[in-house]
Length: 527
Image (cartoon, rainbow, N blue to C red):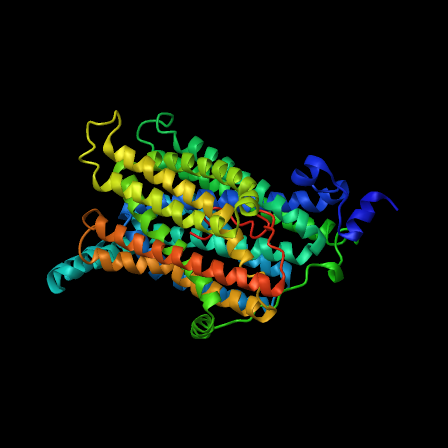
């Protein structure tokens, strides 16, 4: 028997040196590994283009203040609806049909948006109804409610853009987290997962760089289109075309895998696949009760909420500055392309060194990295925004441009730190728990953290906006960020004590899991 087959069957691949670190893949496994990398790449490629374009559409058309309303009143209920529909379909459709059924609405909408919906957006926009609603609000309701309700009307006025925003958010959860990782877990052996998953994440995240370059190329075309031609419309043609092609590649790769890999007994045997983890379906009430009874799990959910709420508050302020700096869609989207490219490079760099930080400096230092990074960079960013008029003349660039760059730097460093250090330390915290606490606790945290993390910042912003615009409430928002991060840091110290006690009780190994292999999720799949 060859060494290759021995390695595969035993689960201990015979690799040494750099190949053990960077390419622990057997030659006969490439048939299985490379198509999965291609699928991961395309999922992330589409996600980055969708993420940047959705922000451009909403911020330019309705202002950054509309984002928290969209997240709370749009993304949250639609996410729940999609999960319910998916659960129903999974009971009646076979897995391959279910995959195609889930990806089809995204493929149809985004392929139609650039060529049918956007060119006719004025025909489908309820302009007269929105004007009537604004007039009613202005004449009949208290003044303190005007700003909040006007933003809801603005979202209604540009509903095609709002739908684009919601479906882009859903692509991260339904497309990447559900379709890709469910398929990967279905066809990957446990021994393969230890080597494959890190590669999926690291090679797949190259899509952030590729998509950033694509956005830059097709957004920066104003000087190349004839006079009278809508440059932003041309950009959307190309970007939506790229998303369409990428979706088709995903479908073809999935079909090819089913035809050529899942029929090859050397690469796939249903009996050898990764054991499916039993994940109980807990209601929101059941989740709160479980977390309230366990201080350990309560600390973990506070970590998740701390990141979700704080980054949401900072991002909306940053995007309001972006909207002020770039009033043209092409310029805004070009900047977002550079932002995505830099985020990709920073993530790849920090993910590579993340596990070494955990091993050398310990769990506590690694877990504190994300909140400390957000607190420091967020504080610097808010200072630039609040005192930008006082900075006028001190630098060769405008104060607004400096605030935009400070916000972009903050966002890049925060997200890269999250995926390289926050996610691994959070997953390590589950290791010393008993099996029931792991399974039920993770399910509860997914329910509470997933829902409240995305909507918590939106609720705070909606309340703040009742007392004026974002620019008038910066000290209040900074106060909320500081309170949230302080609670997050306190939870890290509390969890560290409990974590070390659990490790001593169970005798678990404290070595860090392989970076990226823990989740392999994209940079904004959770934003």
